[in-house]
Image (cartoon, rainbow, N blue to C red):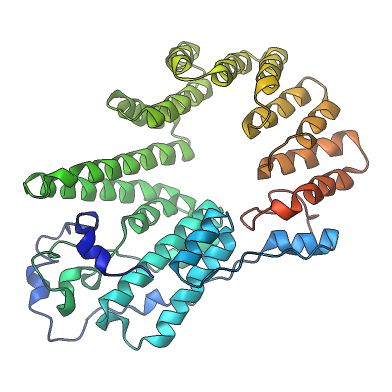
Length: 413
């Protein structure tokens, strides 16, 4: 399990300067002899859901196959192993089980900062998984009780056991939980509420950076927080895109590109800017970003960019030609195979499109299962057989992180 020792070993990663001046220092120091005023019962949410293994259920009901799943230790190492193997639902369920076990074995969590630290870390992992699985309604249900991540109990200085100058500005809340707490609102009924919260998180990170810069001993750790600031800014850019604020998203990405030193991130931002330029119909800007991308990529990127130009101009035949050029030397890239299948469909060749997906050599992503269902319905009365055949081909390798609803394996009720 995550240990409170991490606060001492990597304390700079847990710095958090509360916007209410002095709340994590002077106001709390005088309250150690009094019982906690906040109610932490929300941490034991009655809304924690068990996620079903829908792939395993579908294998049993559609194919009569009983899938086996990894057996791992019931601790943080087991969770990490499940995540590595992409058994994300099992990992989320183990987080839930460990949280419940902690509550069953601890009478008052507010009296034990180590326990509180463990719970917050487990919730952070679970919320990230739920977001990755697109289980947004469950995520909202479970994270909504976390109204304020800056309550006194969440600061090290609140707890007598941790009272020290060394941990004076440390929070028990992992930064990944702050990221989830800021972003999840975009999936709520009021998605625009996430922007003020993202701005608030951005301000908080900047406060920590300023704090580190004023402390010569801590200044070397500024780079870690600069990376965190970048992650928040990227979150803002993709959230604006999600909210269909294309030009605002474009501006944020463009500003980030100006000072971007990491080549991989620079490439990702250039790709996103290219997509945005296509979305807003700006051919000149699209060409500019494609020209910047080409020197960084190999043959695959070269032909993909030619494909983008063709799509921009509505020339799907030429796009198909470029994708076929790529597939001759790169037949393991799911994006290439899936886009080729779509291009073949647009060019009136749905049967060839199905064959591209069926012959793909690697484990197909969800979208390819979805597409083979759609394509098969266009060319065959036995579309159910086609999608089940693909499912059967890969069943032994499919982790529980796949969504059978997205894959269209089950008939809608």
